[in-house]
Amino acid sequence: MRSDNRQAVGARERGAFRRLIIGLAIAWLASCGGDSTVTTVTGAGSAGAKVGPVVSIAVPTGPNTTEIVVDSGPAAAFSLGVTNIPYVTVTVCSPGSADRCVTIDHVFLDTGSVGFRVLRTAVAPLSLPPIKTPADATSATPGGVAAECFPFVLGAVWGPLAQADLRIGGETASSLPIQIIDDAASPDYATPGDCMAAANGGLMNSVTALQANGVLGVGMIAYDCGVPCLTGTYVGGHALYYACPSAPAGCVPAAMPVDLQMQNPVAHFQVNNNGTLIALPPLPGLGASLAKGRLVFGIGTQANNQIPSAATMYLVDANPSSPSYLYVSTKVGAKTYPNSYIDSGSNALFFDDRTISTKCSSTTGTTAGWFCPSSVLQFSATLADAFGTTGQISFSLTSADLLFATANAAFADLGGSTGQSADSFVWGLPFFYGRTVYTSIWGQTLSPKGPWYAF
Image 1 (spheres, helix red, strand yellow):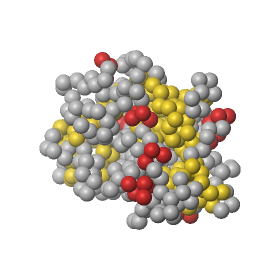
Image 2 (tube, rainbow, N blue to C red):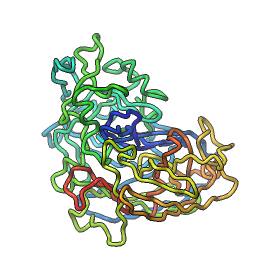
Image 3 (cartoon, rainbow, N blue to C red):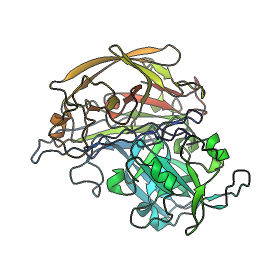
Image 4 (cartoon, one colour):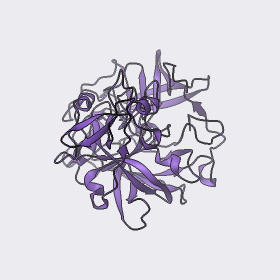
């Protein structure tokens, strides 16, 4: 998911209760690096609808891996389930503790954002220590509890920062800043007006709104903002970090040291810290009721995360002053989408094509963005990186009406056009089915140096 704040170095993604999700994360800033986007459009499955098969792959295995599940979502989220959201399980512990821990399932896996964000109710038993913003006279930042407003394309998460240890599979990231998403019923701190303005669709402050118990952002950047947040210079965008001296006084925009900003947990693993690979099985035509795959940590660090010789590597533009910063390019027919990206946090293929019908009839809620062609459409796209590497990708689109008439949760041919610009092609979760997709982390030890995708 990508965020919609052009000052954050975050992610690029989108989700679904039969909803359109364009990234569950922050848009990466031209000056910081990141684009997170969560966009969802709801649509109902039919009563008595046909339930599709369960498909899975069980490899790679090893202590640097964990299972990915694409299912109907947390029990508390929706009566009809969600669509194309990959979930993992994360254990959160009090810093340095071996047993003061909670294990949280249905955490949204997002290669388009950075950092671990979790609903407060899920970690309330731990009483995690809050992170404080240091007072800084130059930026007019008062000392106080640190909080963050993280905007997506549709919606935002708001809440204080705390310190925790994270365990995922056999990996551990110690004493990491995480965000505690304030729950709707009783927030610790009132949401600032600027944050509400950034939340185009409202706050994602419940399991129902978030469609998950938390978000695990494992994108291309090691931290989620960088210089603008370090200096508290939010000109031209919404404030990301806040200092909250006391609840009655409210929270004010703040400068935030880089080491206290939200961190990519993978970058803090001891060895397998330079990226991830996601492996998901291929799907049948009308999808699957349950899909299971693998999340592997590290690239080229173990026998189970080597890049095969047949894979193609696509380097993203790493020049912060470039209009294509952190993007690749996609061409479909005569149309080129220069601001393209690959994002597990987006639950469909999102692009602007007004020749494809969006007149869907069988869904409910906000459905204007789903594609509903009268027959299955076949496409061939050309993906190009910033340095001339190209490759062909075939994909298909089936009417969302037909897909949502099933009782399935995973679809490889779901598409839509909502929330992204006309220059963007978002290769969401359908792209991952039947592939192994590598996402590097910029600044970590890699050869060649990232950031890049490979598949």
